[in-house]
Length: 405
Image (cartoon, rainbow, N blue to C red; front, side, top):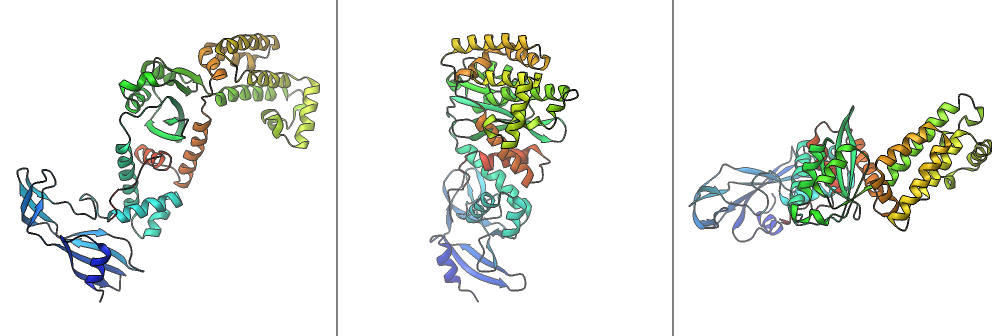
């Protein structure tokens, strides 16, 4: 038989609580520790009045950390007191009254989730139900968000979308490009949903302190940012700008390859950065440039656009962009011209991208991490679960309960 004194020393619950019994179930490999409250009075959890014990609840059972190979549980008939607020159950030091696991078990679950990044695998290792692990994710995220300062300032923000389910189902992810953490996530990408999310993230007092917001050209994002952060600079992400041009180059190549044999198998040759080409790809690239195809002209248009990045001032960027647009028109390549006109319609955000260092580069890396979460979790059926998983792994939150009983 296990010693009650041993578990009393290990649990270290203080003088108010006493281990009165320990029962071992060898068949199910379980240990049940029974705890009694000793004093005749206790504090009301609402008023903190010291009141006499009114009665006891029926016995409750909390999962503790394992003892050797045995799953271990704490059992207690928790006292109730009668205060000016009525009859209330007192607070136990080892767990929240709302859950059936102790704080230490919650901390271990959080550590295992960080290590495995997989809820199912974590539940297997802990020998508990998936629902317990899932509940801890939601609880710890809620706790972490509550610990964030309501007066938190974000000089720079990034807004990006992420596919949620098959079809046109997206979530909007707002992140801090300076730290690489996800600030929060909204279901959908409409103007209404985005605006509500931005107003929730930055309180009204601090909105004028947002200097830049890095976004793509999605109309709903643009409108939301201008309304919520009227003083912020809209910076169209360089990654997306170059992607538009790469898509145009590929369209030119696919149109032209039907007549030009020299463009066969050249897709990645034209889309990769020149310094990343293999020796074989470099040979093909040189041949394409010598042949002066429309695809090679489109490639040069993209490279000339990239050369405007890191302009010393907005005035210089605007001047160079106008010259670039004129040179694109001279190519008479419809696919590239279409992109140039789109850029011209968003000239302020495009030119800001030429000057500002802010970009969605960090947001794109986060996008990859979120995709990893989706893949490991084999998709998420509900937005609530998806949001909690994103914030748990990428929100930079203090997830742990501070109590360590």
